[in-house]
Image (cartoon, rainbow, N blue to C red; front, side, top):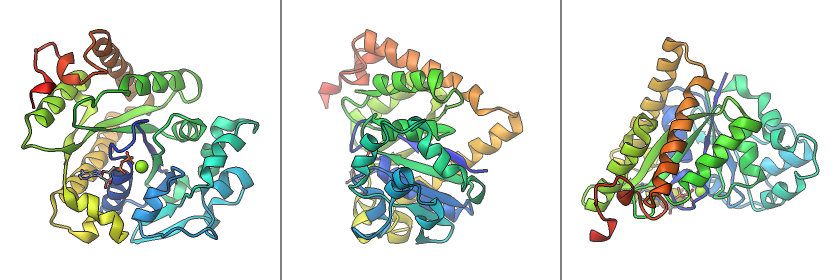
Amino acid sequence: MARVIAIANQKGGVGKTTTAVNLGASLAASEQRTLIIDCDPQGNTTSALGFPKDPARRTLYQSLILDEPLDRIILDAQVEGLDLIPSDKNLVGAAIELVPIENREYKLKSVISGVLAKYNYILIDCAPSLDLLTVNALAASDSVMVPIQCEYLALEGVSELLDTLMRLRRTINPSLAIEGILLTMYDDRTTLSKQVAADLRSFFGAQVFETVIPRNVRLAEAPSHGMPVMFYDIHSKGAESYIQLAKEVIANAQKRIRQGIGSTDSGAGLNTAAAAATAGADSGGLPTGSANGGGNGGSPGTE
Ligand SMILES: Nc1ncnc2c1ncn2[C@@H]1O[C@H](COP(=O)(O)OP(=O)(O)O)[C@@H](O)[C@H]1O
Ligand SMILES: [Mg+2]
């Protein structure tokens, strides 16, 4: 049975799509059969995997709204072990057209239930919003991975996201766990990056992946060549970091099995994370840059 992981943060440009594409390819390279679902009408994941815009192509829209079987929409992502459910701008309509549908929050969950047995991992790349499509993604997921950019204002919106996740756990998906918080676009030459990373770790503790994704130009270039970075430049720091992340995700799954921990247990971390984020927000540090939140006087403005 696949572990379904939503990659979500309502902030745009934090590395959700980059993570979906490159973690997906790295999991597939580690012999984990992986499906990436492009759940963003911008279709960036679809094009980053080498599928140019094509109005004739069926997408997640047809499956969600027109009940087209998912099997007829799945594409071979031209990487062994990696498949894709593409998206395009029509998906914008889905968020609205879902509204009158019965069980509208669970439509994606029911759509993917038929393919869970085919995969080890299903990664859902979410749009930068908390609309009904993203709610569908979170309702369908075992866990959520939150990429956070290592920059000033990094935590802006994170407490809102965590609030939403908590609300979802109470109502729509009680077993939603936190897969981890991923630090992206880390630049070890700047004090600011180091400061933000240190503060995020002190806020979120063990919820933060040990693997950090560096700012790496190869990661930004690969999508225009329509391929994951590991096929574009396997020796790049970007490729190495996502391979490392895949190892960490797989190791965490093995740890959960050894410890017999259900996904609900790890959800406790969500409460801790939300509490930490709220505490940070209360102290005035969180929304304006985590570097203030730790109370250590470090100012992100010193960079
Ligand atoms: N680690 C990184 N190093 C350099 N550029 C990156 C990195 N991660 C993402 N980018 C670039 O930053 C932009 C936003 O990333 P993207 O993954 O599309 O974010 P999101 O899906 O959250 O909006 C893209 O142009 C992408 O190529
Ligand atoms: Mg994106």
